[in-house]
Length: 222
Image 1: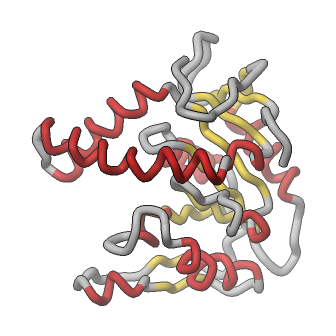
Image 2: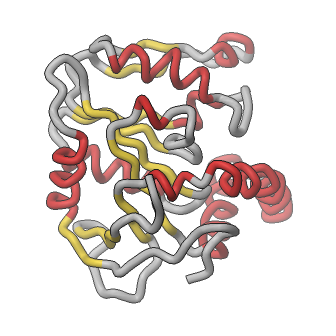
């Protein structure tokens, strides 16, 4: 596996059924009576965070997912932590539901809101930087998704071509611009050091990616 700059090698790896891993996350988060558990799924762009978050949502009763891409939309690639705190995490921490429209949505004519019902038992926030230093005190459990650096790039480019209708050249340019900010951000913040669990999306161990996950203990201090 080709790791991104600064990222330590994960492992030893073990295969766990998704349901078992979901229970481990719930146990690690504890049970707060007045508010939902808050789980952060962090990793590089194209690493498979969104897919993992959606799989966990399906495995955890009463779970909801918030995507940092929605919080950051038309605002900033990485300078959105204040919006996540004010609009999502602080309401959840005091037991309120979320009905939040980030300011850039109004400014650019995007309808709707980010919504999480007050009765949600678990909220999974996913995206690059959701377990960053400034958000870590408001998160119960952090997961770092370790991916192959080159494969994450290829996946991200394919996704951008499909989602945004870009040709390959435009998608590659957009990815290079993203990576130019992502790499120094992660090198400085080092979210893998705060992870409670590390999940691999590239591994030679045989497993069923639909029903199982590759898990390791964290590589560094939290």
